[in-house]
Image (tube, rainbow, N blue to C red; front, side, top):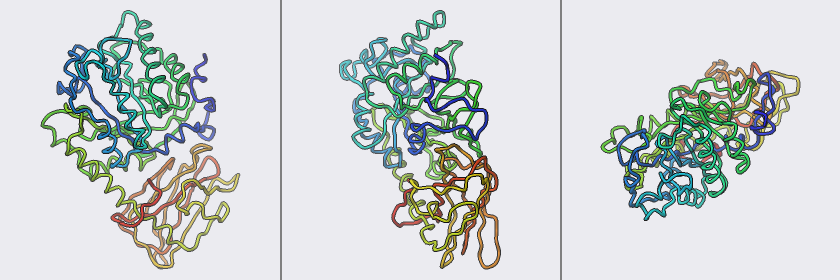
Length: 449
């Protein structure tokens, strides 16, 4: 099968950014914005991050395992989906796979009849979160460097078990920190996945997974300019980014006596703005402890973070505007209506546009959210935001790339009028939303989340 057919069928090879468009499942995935990533396994009980595959399966003894607690804590933070690492690099499987004995069925936990994947999938769906999985190709227990084809058969069998037996998956992570010199049949992996889960987003690092639907970055590596189209398989493809960061600094798995590494609300907010605020997905790593529960401090911090997000983005001040002006497109106010399901479209053939809004009384704000209409691709390359108080216009923000969402933070500003200039674009600019906020609002929550 040709490589291009392994991707969503609408993703034909493109040679310039203007031609690259997302598939509907990618758009739906980008709408989720914020997810939780669960790490639990022998590493949890051994106080380590990466195992070598030699741990006794009986170390896995989460006596109070409660995926519902994880789901509720993630939902309180604002997460819309949950990804479980079904197999980490140590090779231990959290479901009773037929492919290897190195799994929960060889543990005394639940007398070898437990299934963490099944319990977590049920809890997520029960509370309205989308569910996905991560399955590491790197496997220090089963890795067969002298016979990569034998390992490919094992991995494909594991993929089929997970994609056939646990319902619809929103995402499948295929990733690894290293490959021990092993080669992998990524083409075959994607074919198997597409056969059972045609709408699942396949995510992984660009330097590890050469083809896929989403690319992975980590906090601190997410560029300020974020272009959804990247070079893949010798052509440009739509592969939006997801930023992963753990709740406890540099710890994906739980470690004892590590409360000092629990990130503050301010640190989490910074990570959010450097991911969602730059058009990336935000995937927050959560680590159940040896009980199979998230520590109480983690649950508390997640609730504090969710409350802070809600308070910060609770009132869209654009609703106070009473006058709209447009250059380069129709005068309809879809960009300011508070509804991300509507959009304002510039005139065909025009590559610039200016939208402005005025207020009967001056407004005070410190952040502005822009959302681009991406169905036809990412077009806007440069933008500038100006404010007017009295007769003076001041540039308060400017940049490149908007994408799914761009949150511009600024000093507290008072304005009677705002002007949004889209100065460079590869096609007619199209805007879903322009929203204005002042931190600390306590009114009705807008549709930002």
